[in-house]
Amino acid sequence: MAPPTTLNAAPLDIVEVNQKGVKHQSELAPYQSIVTPSSISTIPIINLHGLDDPLTKASIIKAIDKACTDWGLFLVVNHGIEESTIEEMLECVKAFFTLPLEEKMKYMARDLTIPVDYISQPNGTLREVLRHQGRPTSDEIILLWPSKPSNYKDAAKAFLEATWRLAMRLARAISEGLGKDEGYVEGTMEDGFQYILCNYYPPCPNPQQALGMGPHTDQCHMVILTDNVDGLQLKHIGKWVTVPNVPGALVVFLGTSMEKASEGRYKAAEHQVMVNEKTARISLAVGNGTEIKGLDARLHL
Ligand SMILES: O=C(O)CCC(=O)C(=O)O
Ligand SMILES: [Fe+2]
Image 1 (cartoon, rainbow, N blue to C red):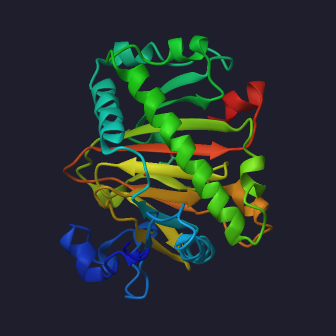
Image 2: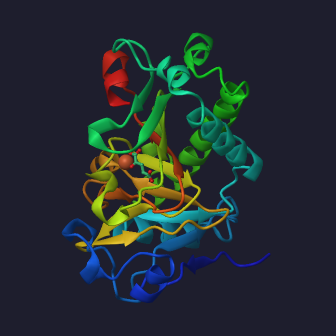
């Protein structure tokens, strides 16, 4: 068996980021002074193959603990979610956002009791977002999810269930990395809440002058995210670092309740989103956390 590996992403230095079309720091607006020129700034990519093998588990747990401590964000490969499950969900979400506006508007929540919502251009951004609960769920809730494209409900159910299983595996690994019982974090997620934000960012002719989403942290234990192109940025030691879109990898980052569960050892990842001049970007951000009930759950979306 191959030893577990903690691969390092290519250094996010100015040259590499420039090759991706982002301008030099001095040409950017202040909030986009983003580039970390140091080659030591490499976002960890953790290979989860071997996480269930007693021989290799400890070193993977150590790598996860280090990534959580140093970054609050890491990429995972061999994460156990089928490529086809992710692809189908991305395709469904893309198809949803290409529907006519009046069709999408059917999902605008009329009141706070409805656990599905579509918003066009929140806070003056160009973004569109479809968001809904993944857990707890029921046939009645799933009925409210988009009916177009026709496979949306099945694709979302499969994707969200697989994502929750991955969140549980990571919760166990994180607990051990914290020196606690394996079930420490998982125990707080027994009747846990899960939500998905499907974000669509159209191309923007002046990407230097706009942000897809401003700086924030998310209120959950961990977000598991996939996208079709770079755009997500993490604040790391005072600088914005672009999180690379690595084929086959998922992004994992910590939310505010994990900061609390870790008694401050880990920090919630502050992040923002850049827009792209040429390419529309879709991201699926799945928040996984503790139980949240009733109206609070709806407000949390
Ligand atoms: O689009 C992204 O990469 C991040 C989205 C995000 O931060 C969110 O939905 O809370
Ligand atoms: Fe976020």
